[in-house]
Image (cartoon, rainbow, N blue to C red; front, top):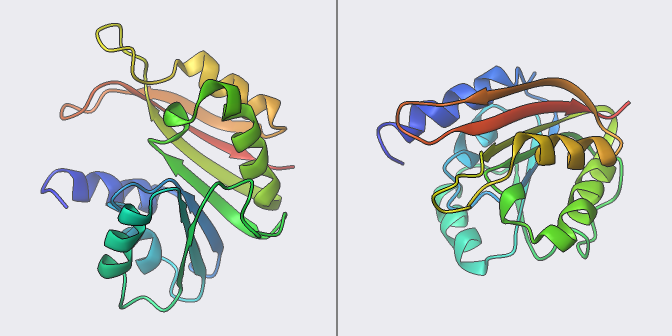
Length: 174
């Protein structure tokens, strides 16, 4: 965890205002930079981490060995035996833009399905950049979330000094 990224992820998790007893699904955690903060904020809750990469999950497993409230699952979210309506919170940080466009809506629909009624989904993704084309536009991110049946609670464009522009949204399943 870098000196700059640690506080960035810690604040993001703190801003989620978790009570500590929720069931949280973290989708596509990469190296798990935020996973530790999620696990720490759930002393009476549960964190399920889903990723396609066996290598990333191996790294996360080592980082989070001391947290008994963490489950790791490898595979496509659509194929995993995770019951619908079983999570209070879904977190997808810097991952929706990496999902193939032809599969993106189905993935977000599946994530939305995992939420309980009243559950919230937190998304954060880089704004598409003209120089490398990597990212997703705010309009496209909002559209895929809306099309999944989630209602937007907040949406903003951020530009931290140490990263490129990004979009951040919070959605609720009504």
